Image (cartoon, rainbow, N blue to C red):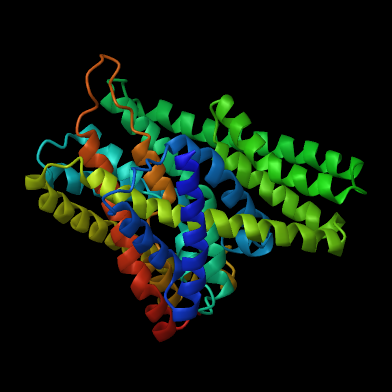
Length: 413
């Protein structure tokens, strides 16, 4: 019962902190993370370890579904070139870049372990970026690209992570087989999403006069989509996103205005609570993992995390500006690139600086297996988890605190 009381207390504190952040003009995610760290450092505070399966099931499906439901499909299609390059190509480029750096600067970090770390930190979290830049006047294009990227890059990162962990545990890595598995996992997830969207659309027509049933079904189905896809060993992330996109299209054409407003109000409350809890929980994890690192290695690991965070940001800057150049070149060469899809330097920089790591990286790290198939302990598990959480915190606090200033200075077009 005591643990339930602590959770309720944290939720109450999260709501108050969010209101305070709005009043004192500090980005809410930043203040919530600092609050979580402060709570975790209280000597009498029991450890609240975050189970990765809770994040992947309770937090991820509704957040992905909500983002997909609200994104403009027309704008998504216009910027699909940039979104796909960042959500797939950049994920694997970041994985490789971090792996190279980690292998050479961290003693004992083998290539397979380095790729595990790289895959954990390869995906960015648009929830943090949007939360931090809320009411700062980001351009619609920037928001669409950030949200569109986040809808896909989680799936890419999870697949890269699965292959990297398999390499650590001794499973042979074959490039052509890995590439085929990647396509099948994405296509399978999309197929699950399409089928469930079709089923849900028929259920909604059947119960169209019962507003509470409709809203309840729309709340339940993201979890169903995620679990069903994972059961068939395909991408639950992609299944949830495809379901959200399908329901968004149905909502715009079939739902009465009253139902849209009721549904929107309900989802706003759910997403507000989930977003707030995510950032508090991220902060709470840092004191826990810090205790698992020997004192003599703590400063070294913090230094490694800073270097890795800088490398990840540099890779993103390079890739986004490279995308700006290739889009312009294609447009001037009269290829199929719309003028609306072009990026300018200000938008590229804001997109780059908004590439913060977040809850998915945290969940993947905490989900590392404790042992290998041989029964031996997973090598450097504590170090990888600490580095992952430290990079998440540095990116959220460092980039998060400076991003509003950058947006105001540089504009949003």
